[in-house]
Image 1: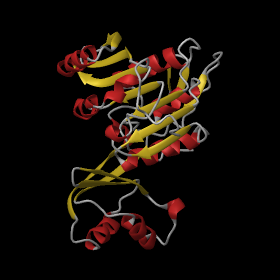
Image 2 (image 1 turned 180 degrees about the horizontal axis):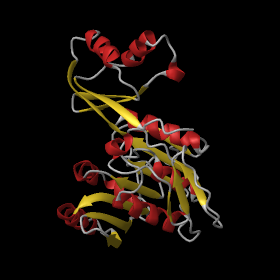
Image 3 (image 1 turned 30 degrees about the horizontal axis):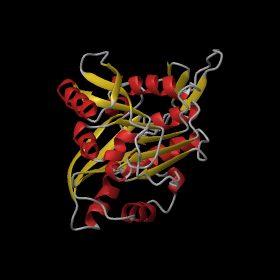
Image 4 (image 1 turned 90 degrees about the vertical axis):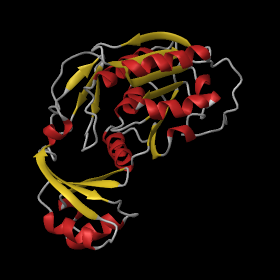
Amino acid sequence: MSNPYKNLWIYYLQGVIRGNELEKVISIYEQGSINNSSFIGNWEEDGFSFLFFSASSDELVQKIVEQSKDLRLIDKYEMTGEAWHGEAIESYTSGSLCISPPWKIPFVNKPNLKHILLDPGVVFGTGRHPTTEDCLSYIEHLCSSQYYSISTAIDIGTGTGLLAIAAAKLGCKKVLALDFNLLAVKTAQKNIRLNSLEDKILAIQGRAEDFVSLPADLVVANIHYDVMNRFFEIPEFFQHKWLILSGLLRSEVNKVLDKLIKEGITVVETVSPDGVWNTILAKGNSNVSCNCKTDAKY
């Protein structure tokens, strides 16, 4: 398998494409040849769309724009996949995990190594960001130990699904992988299938505040502070056994720590290897009575 993201053509549109109209148009104009289609995905954010292709698709995008009065082409970019991600997409190890793109699987002769196939697509997150590496380290610390008994987890802002997959690989029996962005969810679902973990991980689209009340031994949230701050007002969030909170800048981490301490949460450790990004490991108030639905399934 070769790298499908070696070169990218990115079309920046004002407006959001409704429903599955994009797939319909692409299917029509590419004679329904899905396997040979150059279309990679559609990233929607704040009323704008980014269409990703592995080949120049000017005529097709023009037809897509013509189909809707709400769309306008703003710009087009051509770049390598590595330029888009800001780094090379390479195999690497984190603790007992070996994380590899499916087109570049290394031979690693190391006992007890657990392999994860990760196709990042065009979703940010190859796993090498300091916050991701810190989260992986804490997930392994908790999930690989029988002492902590982590059998269920929620990964908020799952992106490529890496942290959810890591939790499952390290012994977690059921994981809910959540993201508000549909392309991120589709990417996570693909990676879940690549690792044959469909029976352990469910990836869904949704808002974090609608799911943090679900019962789970562990909640991982590597997200923007503004999003994290919204579910701090939900009492059930603090009643999980363990919390891993990341993606926090120096000015934000102190606000989060103040909130955790106010709620009686035990902060086990805060790390910031690069002095910029911070990750918190905290023990929740799992002994407090919780109004969560104990029959929730994920």
